[in-house]
View 1 (cartoon, one colour):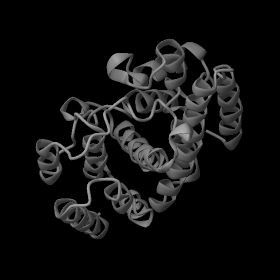
View 2 (cartoon, rainbow, N blue to C red; view 1 turned 60 degrees about the vertical axis):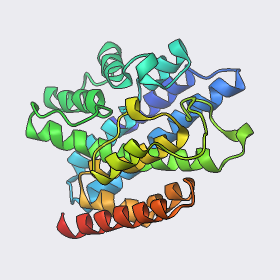
View 3 (tube, rainbow, N blue to C red; view 1 turned 180 degrees about the vertical axis):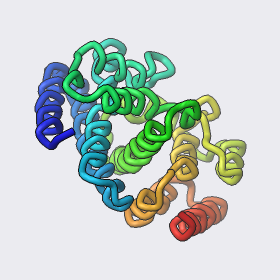
View 4 (cartoon, rainbow, N blue to C red; view 1 turned 45 degrees about the vertical axis):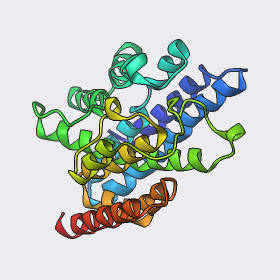
Length: 262
């Protein structure tokens, strides 16, 4: 893969995004949210790749995966008006199918195409599939880390923006009720990834986001998480209780240990 390939993909992707633009202000806001998210994930994956000392071809492959990882979001929103996979369609699978149908990767080697398609397909899976080749698993882990690092930013923007500026598809329609579910908090202390089926409120969803910390894979990812202070920022939007302060310390200690052990 060459830089010219990635430049072509970026131009094609921008045109693909424009094909979903809408005169409806709310729909346009949600489409642009995913477009901007995509380019930030590209930046994240380049930063992580640099920290892992990947070579130029590996980095270009990683950037291409990041560029296409959410391509399924656009037809998903166009058809269903939501980014909730559970009530619409799995956007990872739809993205992989879209890449195959469009034939956009046809000039790449069969190996590169397979890595990209598999990484897009499984970037949003609850866990990394084990029955894949080592290279595919590596790049799936890479895109999952880069994606989470910007999803945290997306939610910070959502929590901190005035209601009229919020992208409606971000909050998932969850009630913004006080408190949180104790089983969800317990799951975080168990270092278990919380599933959407377990959450009842927006605060539960914030705890779910914190549980993603246990699903990062690489030292540079943990370093970026720490530098961006996402734990502090998410906890600041949870109830101001001793339990939340204790949780913050617990998570920061986990991150610190990961940075020194990976």
